[in-house]
Amino acid sequence: MDERSRPALSPSAQQRAKRQQRVEELCAASLRALTGNADLHYRGRQLHQGLRRVPLLAPHLRVDSDEDDFSDCRGAADGTALRLLHSDPDIHREFCPGDDERIARLMFEWLEQMRVETLVRDDMPGMRHNLQQRFAHWSTDFYRAGLTEGRLGILLYTAAQMCWSRLTAQRVLEETEDHIEGTRLKLASRIGTPLAGIRRHRFDQRQFAHHALGLARTIGDMTKGEHAEDGRDDKAQEDAEDQEEISRFALLLEFDQGEGDTPALATSGESKVFAAADQGYRIHTTRYDTEVDAKSLLRPALLREYREKLDRRVAAQGINIPHLARLLHALLARPDSDGWLFGEEEGYIDGRRLAQLISSPAERRIFRQDRQTPVSNCLVSLLVDCSGSMKTHIEAVATLIDILLRSLEMASVTTELLGFTTGAWNGGRAWRDWQRAGEPAHPGRLNESCHMIFKSADRSWRRSRAGIAGLLKADLFREGVDGEAVDWACQRMLARGEPRRILIVISDGCPSDAATGRANDVFYLDNHLKDVVARREREDAVEIMGLGVGLDLSPFYLNSLATDMTQALDNALFHEIVQLIGRRHRR
Image (cartoon, rainbow, N blue to C red; front, side):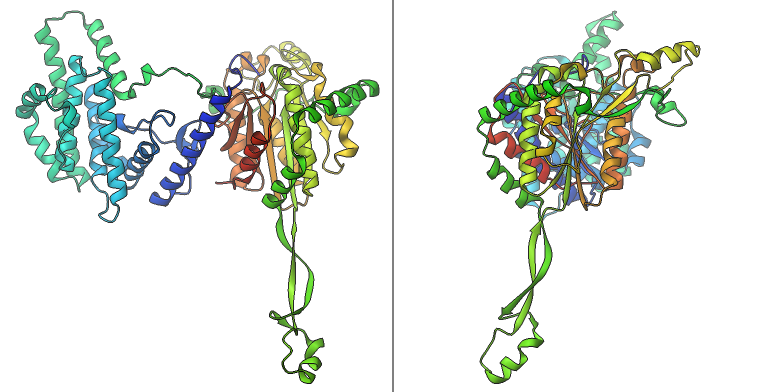
């Protein structure tokens, strides 16, 4: 959709994305079970509680699901759960050093994490093992990466090993024991008293914090003392070196890990304009907004040409559509009462057969039962981002959509296909009206919204075949205002009577409209999309999912799947989409 859109995923990246998503689901489930907090989930590869990000405040909690074992990921999740359960944020903030004490703050945060990890219940030996293994693996990786060669690295690493050993009553990592021995002796005389205190008061956070703060500040003072011993006068250079080492220490080798085949992540940030607005999201004018039947925008002859082209692509994919329909039916159908079954051996007594019981006392088939028939009383709406960057992928996307719509209809599921774009590039008439009005500050959305209906819920796939092929018309694709489109699609779904409603947003990037971005700020539309999705999720009437075209849309949608549209569509991809649809909405 804009410069923040990313290239398509390679097949290996798809596998990595799938594994990461699975690991995050399992870890989030573990966190919810351990804490009793149903709002914990991963979004954009980061843990969130509702809409608030849960920070990872200790280096050894940072894991990479591609590089680390699942036990490491589970250990990090267990450590986070213990922090949420046993650490009082108010007490922690009361004692925590300020930002000007960078090293002291790093150690204080880390010590509190170590403290809570000692509070594992005796009946959870598996959790204790996960935590110990995670810290050991982090220590080994840090040492083998050569990060203990710097004066600050060896000091912080040794302090961490000593504190962990004292709190858990475990010996320091054997592989590095000789390497840290000199620094360990140097530290022992300086931190011996607070080290004993953190062990003694690990069950009392406030008492522990007194000793932890003293220990953290001692470590901070020792780094300053080493500067003086080195005789350095360049304070700026010292700060830069310190900051570099602290960053490397805290980020756990993150500087050494390129993106590789990791799926591109939709980038987003905070919009000051959106946050400061009293009335939230604004629209400068709706005068030029349109809602059109996409079929009316194309000549009939061109629609026939597009339809024939789409049919050839669908046939070339070799997708087992009946099998896909059976999977969807099994997933979305719910038992519904459909009359009675008579002549059963158990159930409700059938009064019409009592005479038969008298004449034949051994007769047992005098009961009736409710007849349950699976019914797919569900609405699935596909909302397609028709922004300029999607033109590259639209033939593959249209093919996927056509196959999915056919399969859903065969599964007796009601479907709808919608699209969104803008009526012009760079604002069009709305932008010119704003200029004529004197260009007031922060006007909100400054473009002509265009919502398109390719297939309505009231029309079957066969009657809508031509309209679906309208997706292939390239000049429909301009810019995109995702938040309004999601709201519009939800409103259409809520106007219908199906008890279950699923909205799948198909997009390859972040919301983008050049005019709106210039007049407000770059993340204005991003924040509105997040606000709309969060509001709709709280209402719990529509399940919203994101299908990313070469992009991970998890910063915007709780349930999302990154796909690679540069490869031929196969049954495995559709099975992954079925799994996406099968995930129950979680508030």
